[in-house]
Image 1: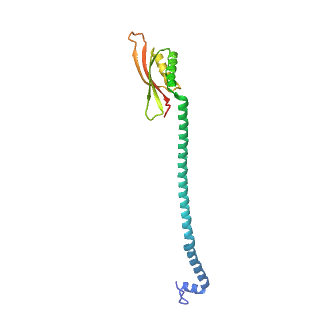
Image 2: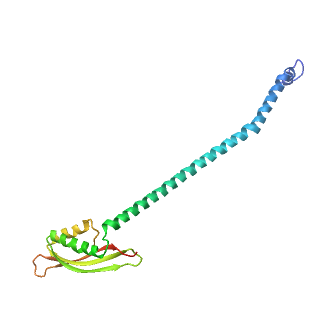
Image 3: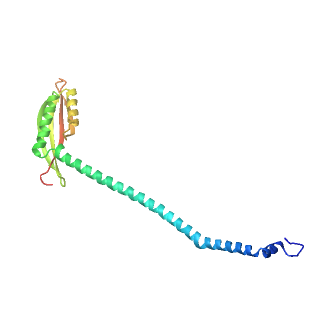
Length: 196
């Protein structure tokens, strides 16, 4: 734009007439740019870096807490398993060969009697396994009776609190046709070795 009365462009004329105010505005503008470039921008970058570091630290803390919870759970589970194993060794399985014999023959004889079966003592054999603190006590027993009583007997063995496992059961029918079933059971239990 130009001012036709004086021949000087309008902008120059405003600058000349208000020189102090224009210089003051320019100085303020330059100071703002310098302040932004040398103070505000670097501080905003530091704040962004601090925020990034905080987020990373929070993630690392969450991961560490999860690892700690897993480790604590593992230790708790291991402690519980050790206690349950100690309980198993002290109260569930027999402590020696004579205890295993009593458990198999005494308990099974009583169960057979309650189930109205004829019980015949069988054979037994302790079997030591290398590298184990337990010895397997294998026993074979024979019982005779009707099919319902035999099922009751086997169910009683499997649900008893004592640790006796039915390994095999061989059934044979009475050849005289009296409805009697003969069962040869192979059972096993365990007892602690004197020396591990």
